[in-house]
Length: 156
Length: 156
Image (cartoon, rainbow over all chains, first blue to last red; front, side, top):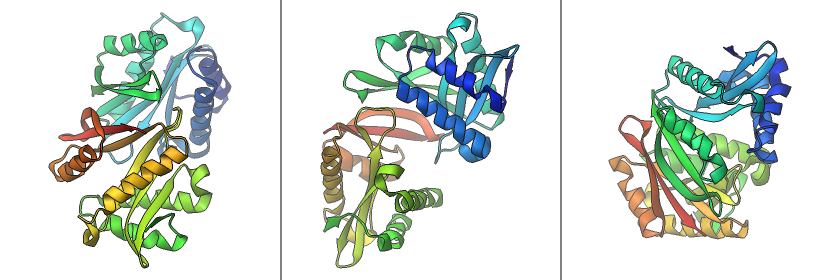
């Protein structure tokens, strides 16, 4: 079931990230920092909103989103990840749909998703294509030489 | 002369922003916040680097740049502005060239510049075209309906 995480879900969110096999150590630590900001300041002040999909007490996956500064109701999907045992079960689609609903309820107009152009992110890009996102821009060599930034958008 | 600003230059940097006639109140306040972070934490910890072009004690213009998280040596030019009395004198070009040199000296590989697609930013976009930037992407309606994000890049 998708809900707002409790403080105790932090370690499991960390584990989901650490077990994706696509996120680097630095990326895992980045999510840890957003989570700490969220715990310390709450969503509105930190700008980070989290949702989790849990079965019993197990976190199957999570998403993190928030408003983009200096825009009119544009939101970023900062992170979304599903644990290795919960793939292919619609958890990612559920979290994405719940994120869109939550952003809409906050007044959001446009949702931005950034991902990598590397081959290992092909399933991720296919996921956004399949869920109605438009591949609107690519920045060559953004992350590193040979690793492009791919930007998807969806009007809500 | 272009230099690293002293703490006392803050009010003049604010005034340059307030007098551009293109930045909104919210944008002016955003730069104020970056400046406060920079004063409180320094460049490396805050992630914000400032340079100013001064004549005698007057700030003619400034630029603010810094590394983009989770990338390999990609930098953002966050802000650049020139006071109304110093336009057409090459101050903007000088600040941009100094930013590029400074980013190179930090090891930077790629510089990203984001601006608006609104007509009032046409001189800004022409400035980046004229200084060797590639218009690499546009995100429709990013800032607000009818106000696109235009992304320029330059490999350093």
